[in-house]
Image (cartoon, rainbow, N blue to C red; front, top):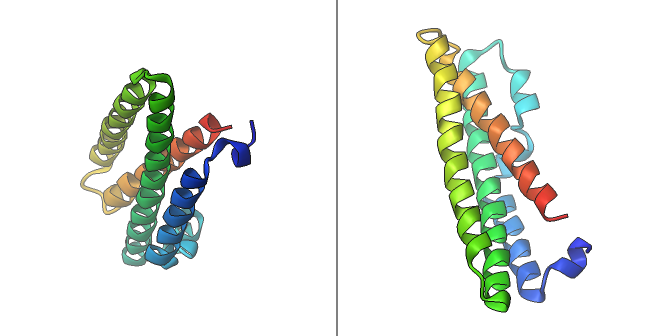
Length: 141
C-alpha cells in the first residue's frame, strides 16, 4: 500500500497542517540539525543553544508523527471496532518517553560535573527521538 493510498483526505489535510505548523514554528531547525550543531562544538554556549533549538524542533516533529499515528489508529478502530492497536501504541509511546529520559539521564550523570554533561544529554535526546521518528515512518510503509 502506498502512502498516497493509505491516507484519507482528512489524514492528508491533518498531515499537511502538521507539516505547515512545523515549518512555521521551527524555521531555525533547518539550520540547527545535530550535524550543524557539531560544527559549533568549540563554543560550548553556542553548541548548547544550537542543541536546544534542535531538541525542541525534533520533539515537535515527533509529536506530529505520534499525532498522525494516533489519528490513523483511531480511524482503524472505528472501522474494525478494535482498540487494542491504539492502546498498545499509546503505551509504546509512553514507554519510549520513559526510556529516552532514563537513557539520556544516565549519560548525563556519567559526565557530570563536566561542562559537556548537558550537551551529552541533549545529543542523546535528539538521537533517540530521531530513531523513534524513523521507526514510526517505517511502520507506515
